[in-house]
Amino acid sequence: MSKIANRILNLSDSQTLVMTQKSRDLRSKGIDIINLSIGEPDFNTPDYIKKAAKQAINDNFSHYTPVPGFDDLREAVVSKLKNENNLDYNKEQIVVSNGAKQSLTNVFLSIINKGDEVIIPAPYWVSYIELVKLADGIPVILDTCIDNDFKVSAKQVENAITDKTKAFLFNSPSNPTGSIYTREELQSLANVFAKYPDVSIISDEIYEYINFIGKHESIAQFEEIKEQVTIINGVSKGYAMTGWRIGYMAAPVWLAKACIKLQGQTTSGAGSISQKAASAALLVSDNSKEVMKNAFKKRRDLVLELLDNIPGIKRNVPKGAFYVFPNIEFFFNKSNGNYIIKNDNDLAIYLLEKAHVAVVPGIAFGNDSCIRISYAASEAELVEAFSRIKEALGNLK
Image 1 (tube, rainbow, N blue to C red):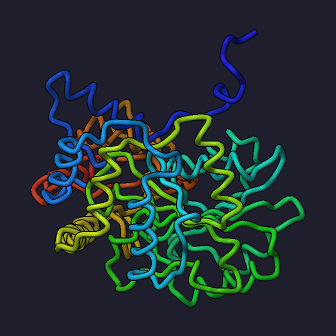
Image 2: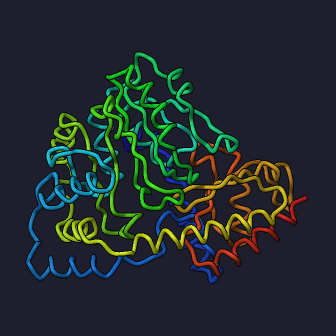
Image 3: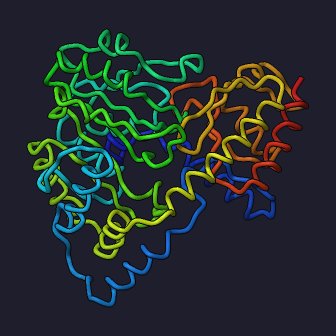
């Protein structure tokens, strides 16, 4: 009999973290690794946010925090949703957590019973499937492809709904593809869900600010389904605050209350200093988000140009986030010495060991014909990385 619970044994390791660790291991041996596997901005937290955190320390915000978050932060989220997204929420619908991942976990543990189904388009963020499994739910995967920009259609979703469907989970802008659902596409999805009022819609909008095509569109804007929608967001990506660990949800009151109850018995409230920093991030306006977005767009354009110089690569044009998800099936069944490329994982290992560039195999995101490349790196690193990738792939015969 195992000493470890089945719920843990049944979980998979995060492949993004696995590749990051392999990169660190090789670096510790003195090998020059360019890590394009990591999912965080390579910028530092803006100074005005750090200043607010220092002030919070000086003001002795060092005690336990309210389980759902400080009132000023919850009100800041309400204001943000109104001013930036034209969405009406109140403080009771906002729950602050230790990162958006905890927000997602809270939702799943609060709504899913054993055997409930959660519809998830693939490619998906690596943790979605595992969090549903952790809650004893059943992930129902909807496949997409590069030719339709990795997006599901309303018809696909409706065909997947059964009497066991509890929720639909998606993110836009997307990790790993950078795809963005248009307002028209979201409206078509809303039209479907309006027929199924008991199905919850979980909209992960953590990459909201890294959008290269215009205004962010949330599925919560459609009144006919708003009471079904839970928005997941946070300050990690848009404000370069990954280590501060602040996420939040905007949810129907009944679900917010359930998540507060759960969080009260697990982690309690998020860190006090981080919350004060997050309040400043949401309330103070400067150009840091725009600077980051413009830098990522410039890098995206560079990466697409570099990819186009590699024969056999097929790619789309990511509209947001900081990833590209190219199709690499052309290289399957090719070899270089002892390296035989049978699948995306083989290719990722080959690039790490021969080109010294870390990427993530697409199977981690539910698509084994692609790899995820993060361009949260300097332009010089990207140019060098793709030079190495091109050489390594060119040696496969």
